Image 1 (cartoon, rainbow, N blue to C red):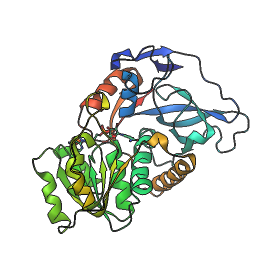
Image 2: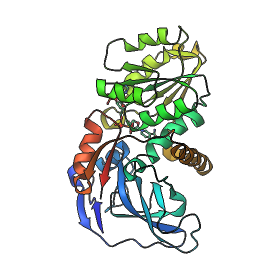
Image 3: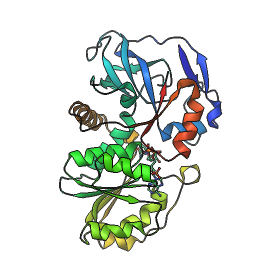
Image 4: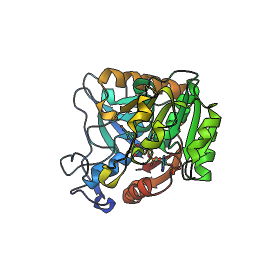
Length: 324
Ligand code: NAP
């Protein structure tokens, strides 16, 4: 089969398309014929060597969607021919086939395309965990999705709207703001406009927002604390300074005076049982069409380097996917 492989860490161009042996499932494992692979910012951090390094050579990618091509001994949850989305693999999704544990694949409803399925795992699981397991957001609360036009942001807008929250989303372009509104935000702000957070006073009748999902904490956390309602929670999802080590100045008194909570999160820390709950909710949301992954750009597998440039550099309008 064809697969992207890396022998060293570095710029996007270290990724090469190669012919490698097809995977075969062991006990409790399945092989998925990948029809689309999701590209996430974390793939670029691992590739560049600033995150814990997998042994080389390796094939990137934790997200994808396709069809079960083979099942190993003892597999009971899926059978050959089932449409699935993939939530992590043993071999990487930037390839024609991926080897997974049977617990890493979930049903993909017939009305959801493979490209959309490739945009489910990291974006939607992150948004769900941030909103409901970390911030414990409740219906009727107001959430600010600070960076709503990207993969995690759009997922958060759809999840929050379906759960009965009032959703305020931000984006840096007209096209991004139009997308955020179309996906369910009642109000949309421009995070590139000076003083844009002042509009929250009017939008919340002076109360502030209950929950903030923060995609760029190194830029925004200081300002976020000043727009929270009493008892407000900020979930830190993204932080992107040099080498992902950005720092930010905050005024702790802004948090103290509101009894506010600052919550960190990394999806990979999610306990197994909570992850199972997340995917049960995501499968239900895909089935009942409240969750509709938005595909921004599709690239052929061979153009993985271009896709990595795009996911970091361009304005986000939904997910970037690779098509093997
Ligand atoms: P993405 O698709 O590239 O989207 C990036 C988002 O950030 C876009 O909505 C972009 O808006 C927005 N943004 C740009 N400038 C901003 C600003 N000044 N203030 C607020 N938002 C701004 O990335 P993603 O997949 O959604 O991921 C978002 C971040 O979360 C990334 O840093 C990623 O590494 C991180 N992440 C963390 C976890 C975790 O477990 N903690 C999991 C998944 C992702 P415009 O393009 O419209 O300007």
